[in-house]
Amino acid sequence: MTITITAFDRSPDGGRGLARDTRVRWALEEVGQPYAVRRVTFDALKQPAHLALNPFGQIPTYEDGDLVLFETGAIILHIAERHAGLLPAAADARARAITWMFAAVNTVEPPVIELEIARLFESDKPWASERLPLVEARVRDRLGQLSRRLGGDDWLDGPFSAGDLMMVSVLLRLRSSGLLDEFPSLAAYVVRGEARPAYARAFADQHALNTRP
Ligand code: GTB
Image 1 (cartoon, rainbow, N blue to C red):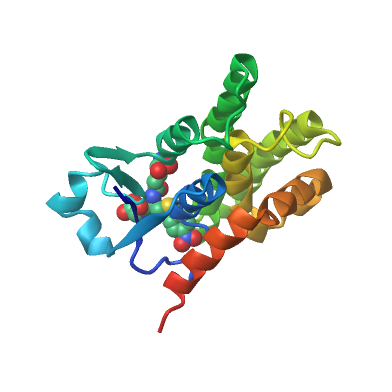
Image 2: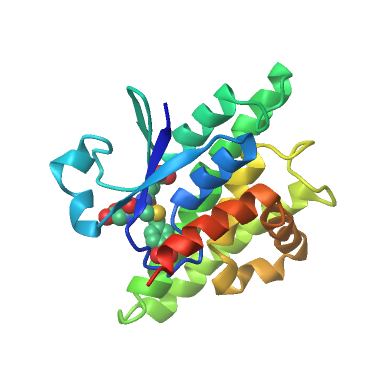
């Protein structure tokens, strides 16, 4: 049975890899699982056929036979649990890697999204110049905490894991803000993630889709 994921018919980022299908592609590439991509327009996202897959009308979704999943955290955990390569075998190390997955989506990504919203959608508001520094400060707090934990290590807890895949994916969303460069060890961590052949393949595939004529 072929795994099928959904992605934007055309991502608004023009192929910069910021839409969340990229992290699922990356996980599938890491574990060597082939997959198909079904493109979904913004209109189709909110139609019954897609809402049956994801009640929130979003991409990405994941289908494998009768199994339908949404939420990238759940999708990547599922992939990592079923295929070798993204989670350590030892129970405690595995639990810690999963902890980092949750930390990425629950603790680091929320202020990152707040910053995107402040920059992209609120910059014309009369209170924007007061709010933006507050949001940036919350992102800096998280980056400082994360960089202190990473220290001089390559990855968050031993070998590369699904926790790193998720954390790097979240941090990539910050690159255009310049904030990541204030934390050189995190900037280097992200570059290490991007240098993985599986990431390069995932990025190239979504880029080809989003830059096609
Ligand atoms: N919590 C969910 C998950 O992790 O799967 C969030 C899924 C989600 O936010 N999906 C977005 C979506 O479908 C695409 S990734 N949005 C359409 C909608 O809600 O109607 C977020 C995203 C979108 C676009 C860019 N970009 O163009 O730069 C970056 C990130």
